[in-house]
Structures are given as structure tokens and as C-alpha cells.
Image (cartoon, rainbow, N blue to C red; front, side, top):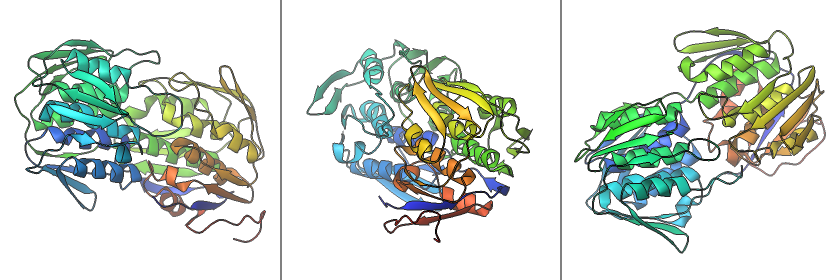
Length: 432
């Protein structure tokens, strides 16, 4: 994974039109579910991301042929059928764990390392295991691996409610496994995220029988086998919203195309409350920022609520608001490592028992900062667009896990942003 930093000079309003990439959070579980298919799967609009590359490596170690051409990835089974996804690959990101359910259902046995990923708080896999056990899997944990066996899974009623709401990757794992189970499976408190809906549509394209997608109750009638298919991954709603926030924080005017506006209703509501002017079309959203944002109170909750994957970016925007804002996260209450780095830029932000308190408007000024995770990195880039002088954002490898060429997209909109691979030498507000 490449290391480097982003060199940003703020103060330029962004203007123009940009296309949203395919959704990372949809593409990864869909790629994992390709293990269920008897023949080749062709996926379009798969973003070029480090996480996608990591999952390609996982699939190859599981005996799949994986090739890429442009924005398309083709995944096909080989004659060999390994059943172990080791720590070397899975430790790099949590989404690799989504191979567990498909691997078990298709091959009757799976050995998958417990996952890694961003440092945003504990994310146990107990609901994944609870769901698979209810389907009849024999499960144990040995040497840091989940070891699962089952001659043929059987349908069951499964409640996936957790302390922070439904589990997205858990729903993906259980729903995928249930497609080849004998009988009917009903998932209660299923995740309703658009990425889960996209996964369900993909599985139905392969020949699965799934109903209730987008609701909290999903019904899967098991089938004997799944075939191949071509499928186009949905738009990345988090990237699209981040680009709109870049327009908002820079005082610009930006249109994002090839999006699904219905997936962003909670985000649009907060942007409207903040005083941003939105124009929403069939697959296009435009934002005009003519004034400083108004202060807000935001709590991240599971879909259809406000996304946890955008709370760091909104915190950056609220640094410019006149008055006090509060940001809480009911999904990952510890996801506030970005606050310390925002303070380095001059933000008046503090962590409290109920989340973050932001007092503005803050006069942000450039400084060296470091991304601690994917979305924290995006928040620091946004803050750098608004800061006076030069900001250097280290930890670009975090950003490249989930944003496809973010620096190039922002530069095309007029941002003064350059990615560099060499070690950064900080000269306060000096020449690049």
C-alpha cells in the first residue's frame, strides 16, 4: 500500500461537475458473494481502491480467477476450492469477513481470520456468528480464526438486533449464506442500508429468491444453486456527500452526477438545515454555498438515519458555523479521533460524554495533520480546503481505502491539492 501525503492550499471555492464512483461498501460484499455462483460474475462500476485490491487477493487465495478491465471486475470459480482466508489478507479490512457466509454455504467449510480495519471502536462479529449458527453451522474460534462447517445450511428465523442497531456486514453474511440454505430464512432487524439492498439485488440476479430488501425484515427462500450474471454496482453515497461537503466548506458550487438521491435524504436534510442550497435531479445533485453554515445538532444512526461515515466530514463543516454545534454517533460512539487533528488546524472542538462540541466560526489555518482512519482523513481534507495557507494531510493510505482518486476529483473542481509520495518536509506557509 502506497504511503504519502496531500499538499493542500485552501481558500479556493470549488466549482464544476464531478461523477460519483461506484460504492465501495456495496462492491465488497457483492464481490464476496460471488463465491456463491457456479459460473462467472462480471461486476461493473467497481472503484479502484486499496480495499477492493485486498478483497481481490482474498478471492484469489480462495481459488477464484479475478481479472480487471477498466471499471469492470470478472470473478470466476476454478476447479480448486480452498476454504481458508488467512490473517495476512483479512487483517487489512473488516469487509473481508463477508466471505465467511458465502464460503460456508457454497463449499460446506470455511476458515476465516477474525477481521481488522479502521480504528473507529469495537465492532464485534458475534451477530455474524449468531446468524450462521441459527442456519445450522458448527462454529468455533481457533488460533484467531473462525472455523465453520455445515453439510447444508437450513432456513431459520434470525434476529440481528445489536446494541447499536442492525449489523450491515452481519446482514450481508447471513443473507448471502441463506440463499443456498434448505427452506426459508427470515432476518429480523436486518440492515436497511442501500448497500445491503444492492447486494440483495445482485443475489437475485444470480437466481436467489429474496424479498423485503430495504426493510427491517428480509425473507430468503433457499435455492439449490446460483448462476453467473453481469451487474452494475450502485453509486457511492458517502463519496457523493463528501464531494458536496467540499463545495459547502469551500463556499463553492458543485454538481455530483450518477448518484442515487433517494439514498441521501438524511444528508440533504442536514445540508438544508445548515443553509446550503440544493438542487436535486433524477441522478444529479447540485450544492451552492452562498453563506456560512448554520450550527446543527447531528446524531449518526443506522440507515435511514444520518450516516456514521459522514459525521467526521460534517464536523469539519460545522467548524465554520456561527454558534455551537453538537455531533454524536450512536453507531460508533468512539469515532472521534479526528477532533485532535482538527484542533491542530484551529478548530474549537472538544469531545464530551455525548460526542463532540463544536464552537464556531473558527478561523482555520494550515498545519500538518494525520489521518487516523478513512473518514477522518476525508474530514481533514475538507478542513484543509477551508484553511488559510498550507495543510499537509499524512496517512493518504487511509483515504485510498475508500475514495477513488479524491485528490484528482477535487483538483478538477479547482482545489489546490497535490498528492506526493516522498517524505513531507513541513515549512509553515512556505512555498511547496
